[in-house]
Length: 540
Image 1: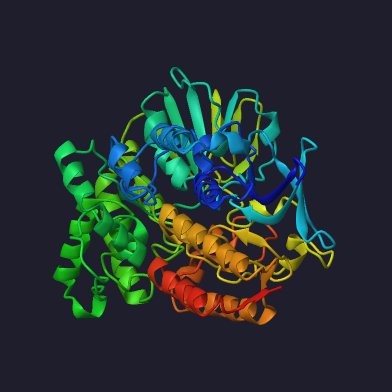
Image 2 (image 1 turned 90 degrees about the horizontal axis):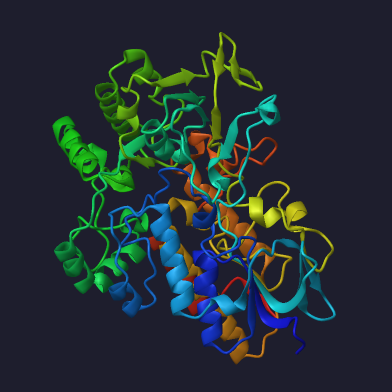
């Protein structure tokens, strides 16, 4: 085998790529990782914006594959900040000696299947060529940033920052008039931090999003010790899907899932009491407090009204409070945000919300933002306008199968996969947390580990039988995608008009991409496939 030939090539050195690399190395296979950044960490390398923080509890948003790692690593806060998460990724890379197998600053330009060789030929924009029998895309679901299509954006002469491509050097907003465009998760996290430094902060909001309080805090050492003693039980709860794997810190470890509380079984006072307790506990698990919130329109309207009332009590100015209350989508059908004093920040005298539904942006000027009604002068402009989610990275690399058509062509009407793991027509090409899997509707670490373990099981199955090639059948792929859409349509998710459906990218097919049944049922489906000899996959 030549120096550029490997058994496996992995694209991406975020949490998916690092665990995938660790598992492949343990089997003795030769492997190389290509990473576009200058270090490990994936999304946590690039997303350094002020206030960047995980929305899953830190003790749940971590690897479970090594009990020693679990016990040795100490998280400082309930919800870890970006620098701490990046430090964790770097620690894992060093602890398991992974860096020497990674090529940094290596962006993949193409991956083409060589039929005679039965291998993927992967080329980087730095003219590096690798060949591998198996290519594994660990490219992340939120790794291709989008810039808003606003006239004149390139003409702004002040300081300009994009949340998902934040500079490595410190950014100071002192004595600055700052404008921020975008009120998704990144914007909601950044607003309170920027407001604490800036002389003036103007937030330009087109569409408000629902957010719940994090109630973040420094972790108590005694509590952490008690939690770690039962880590295995907590992990099992995460895998079964309790709280979508986001954490079970208020749930006693037990065997089997907890039955959800349904809205119709509750009085109004009981429902309010449950929601109040979930609000005070904090975190994304708020959406699971009433079990049918994302399926029952009546339950959803009740929860939505509860949050609206919270916003109106937190924000003093009635007009601002009303503008911050989402009314164009059911709560939870866009990823719920988790914040630290976001709504309260609008009570500060130097913070202003501009409702772009009433006063739209005409253009960006050299000195600020021209609204329909006025010009807002700015020293600094920050955009937090999201990503080409789930498919952006996969479709940007010119992935071409043996029939001569690209993945972008195969997915021209929307992504098509089997289990979110492979696509028909693209042999030996695996995806970690791809479209058609729970991915962004779950704690990503839980989904990453489950996917990597499935891929390794499939590779071992192939090795035991001398199979050189695997891909899903057209029938199994079609059946799975039909199931994914049926599950989505049984919920309120399709009404969200969010990036879950690609609705934030002009021209992108409107297909609900994640698997909405949850990580527990999804794991059972994958386990059944594996137990049946990887039913639905074709081997050669």
